[in-house]
View: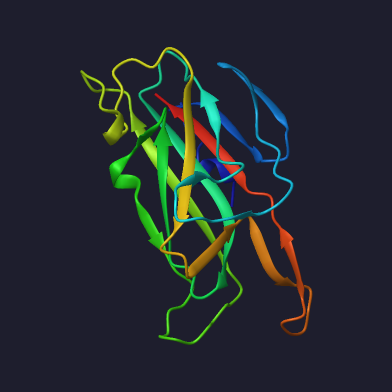
Length: 194
C-alpha cells in the first residue's frame, strides 16, 4: 500500500502565523507577537437588560505585522434562568460593536410555560480583515493594527423576564431538577493568518 504521505502529502506551507488557544483559567500563552494572559473565570454571570462582558471573552491583542486577517472565537456554555432565555450577543472591539456579529439565542420558547433545558454550548466569532485601505471598526476592518486592541463578547437578556446566565451549567449531575448549578470555564481562540 505504501506510505500514508504518498496519498496525503504534507502541505508545503501554511497561512497560519500564530494561534492563541486556551481555557479561561488565568493561563499565560506566549506566541510570536507576545505573551497573553487569559481571564480567570471562577463563577457564572447573570445577565441584565444592559450589555456586559462575558467573563473569559476578553483579550488585548496585537497580531504579527504580516497578518492579513485575525479570527476571534469564544466558546462558552449558557443557560436560561426562569423563562426561555432569549438573549443577545455581539463582538466588541475597543468599545465598538461589530454590527454583523450580532446574534440572538434562545433555549426554548413556548408561550407562558417555563422550560429550562440543559443549556447551550455556543460560539461567538469574527474574522477581522486587515487588507482594507481604511479602518471601519463596526465592520471589523483595520488598515493598520500595530498595538493592542481589546476584543470581547458582550451579552444581555431580551427583557427583565427572560433571564440567562453565561458560563453556567444548570442541573449538573442530578437525576431531576435537584441537580447542581455550576459554572463552566469558557475557551478563547485567536488565529492570525497571512
